[in-house]
Structures are given as structure tokens and as C-alpha cells.
Length: 117
Image 1 (cartoon, helix red, strand yellow):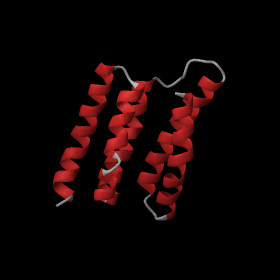
Image 2: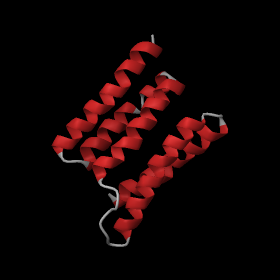
Image 3: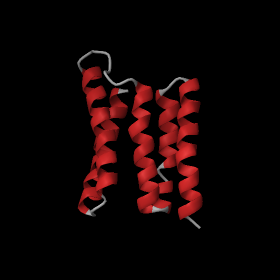
Image 4: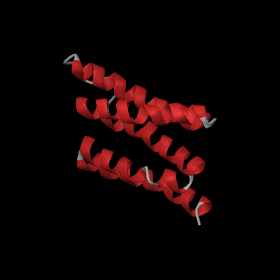
């Protein structure tokens, strides 16, 4: 989980900055919330402590950011669904991973149906 937190911080932070730069403030805040949550957990793991944010609760900002990204970026936002599902299955037990995937599907499907051709 520590290496995953580092990867998310390194690779997702530029997207949050870009969203703020382009004026997509809601998406920037949601993406920044994902980065901050993983920073907190990664720091705790690095210090040898239990992560303060349970892994299943990390899905909330991830699903919110993907939903906002779908609304703002259209098809490019839809591509973030794949890493979101992978994150579910790499971080969570199977039962929670299925619940996370279904919640992502419940958020993404209506947005895709209404906004994408």
C-alpha cells in the first residue's frame, strides 16, 4: 500500500494541478482529495502505523473524482474507470472490491449514457 500511495501521489497530483489550471475546480478538489487521502495513509504506513483512513473509505473520493471527470472530460474521463476498478481489486478484500466496482458502475453508467454518444 505504501508504494501504491507513492505512485498515486506522483502520478495523480499533476492531474489535480492541471484541473485547477484549466478552471475545473470541482474536479481539481476531488482529485486533490484522493491524493491527500493516500498521502495520509502512505505516511502512516511509512511510520509503521495503521492507516487512519480505512481502504474501503478511500473509494469515496476516487468514485467522486471519476464521476466528476466523466462529466467534465467526457470520453477521457471514462478512461479513469479502468484504474478505479483495478484499485478496488488490488486494495480491498473481494467483497468490498465488488461493492466498489458496483458503486463505480452506478455512478459512471448514467453519466456515460446521458453525456456520451
